[in-house]
Length: 215
Image (cartoon, rainbow, N blue to C red; front, side):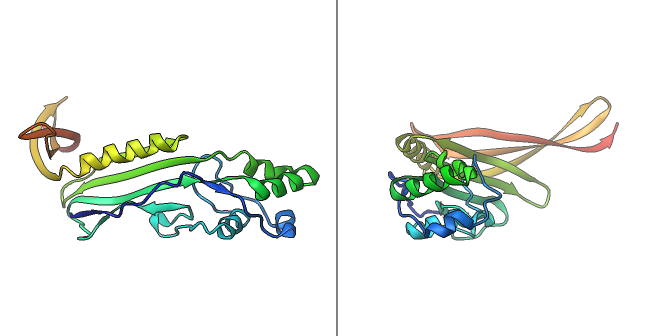
C-alpha cells in the first residue's frame, strides 16, 4: 500500500444561494431525503448543486454526495493493509435567493420543503483501513467524524494526516488459546508507527478469534 494525499480542501462557505426554475421547486418529486448524512439523492437537491457549481461525486462508495477523495492508494493494494475508502464530506445548506424561493413555495403549498430549509452546514472525515490475507480479514481503523464547525473539521483532518504520514506497516501474530473446552486461534494485528518522539512504537490495534477445534 502506498498512500498519496490528494490534499482536498474543506469549503468555508457551504451554501447554495442560486435558485433554480420556480416551477421545478413546485413540481419535482421529493423523496428519499437524507436528513442526517451527506447524500443528495433527490432531483430537487441535484439541480441546486448543479446551479451552484458544486460537484457531486458518484464513485466513492457509489453514493451521490458532495465528497472529495482524500487519500489514494496508487498500488491499489488487495493484500496486507488495504485502503477501503477515504474522503472529506460537506453538507451544504440553503441561503440567499435559493432559500427565499424554497421558503415561498414551502409557505404556499409544499411544507415538505421545510426539510431542505432545516439543513445546517456540516463537515466530515471518513478513513477506513483494513488488513486482508487469505486467513484474516479485519478492520484496522475506521474513523468517521462529523463537525458543525469547519475549523474543528480541519484540525481533525490535520491530526489524522500527521498520524498517516508517520508511515504504517503491519504484522500478524498467531497464537492459540483454550476456553471452555474449545481451542481458538487468536490473530493479533500489530501496526508499527514511527514515534513522534524517537524510535518506534508497537501498537496492538485489534484482535479477532476463530474457533479451531474442540478439546
